[in-house]
Image (cartoon, rainbow, N blue to C red; front, top):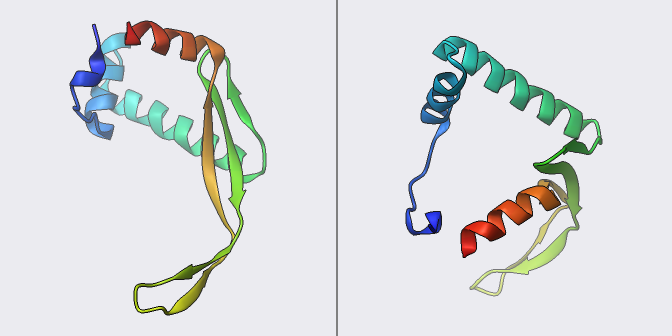
Length: 102
């Protein structure tokens, strides 16, 4: 079954509800776990650490170099260097996702 046919977005609140239901946590406990996870992940990545979650993937910062840009009216400007969060799926997750393609 291909889940890509359904373009449903699961936002934070429904995600936390699903998390709570799976382990019989209260919504407050699940929300606290979610917030702690996100805060810890962001904190570690901002320190320059690569966060590797076995079976899922790794998160790290990547620096995009600055570059000139040109607007429609031929005005020129410069985009400065900026950081982006990079996610690389693990081999385990990649294999699971490939199984869904079939």
